[in-house]
Image (cartoon, rainbow, N blue to C red; front, side, top):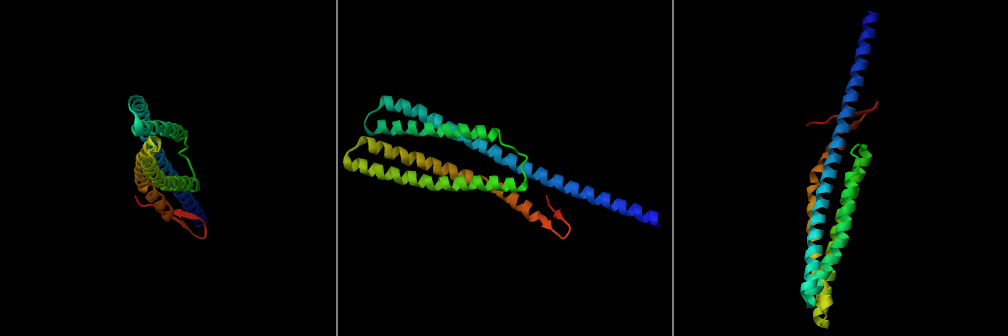
Length: 200
């Protein structure tokens, strides 16, 4: 009888360890998938920003050489502004390619929250760019300054594009936020440890 109890206890312990291991693997796999999704979206977003930048640099350079007046300055600012955007897109894509997918739960939540904060901050800055552009445009008309008029028009265009870009990027990440929330809600603390009850 004592031997049977020992075997039962051993089987119970093995089952508990296996169950905990499976749950841990399930969490690790889900976090890896979440991080992979974020990285792929980052790479796609940086490609889009890079494409927009290259197009603006090309048309802006050509337009600056072929036009005059406020239009010339409009193209000049488009090319200059997107030289910075292209650098940001390049560094962003490079960083995404080197990003690690094997992050802990805390690291995954931090990375996700940091990206959301950056996108929301950028959205506010984009409104500021458009407001500055409107001010320069109006001032350019008042002062009969082609430079201020053209620069103002360019800032409105670039700010509007970035506003839409950052807003759509933020909204596209809703599935990631939901998956993280589900992982957090599925982890339960009890007196002896942690359990993970995930429903797929």
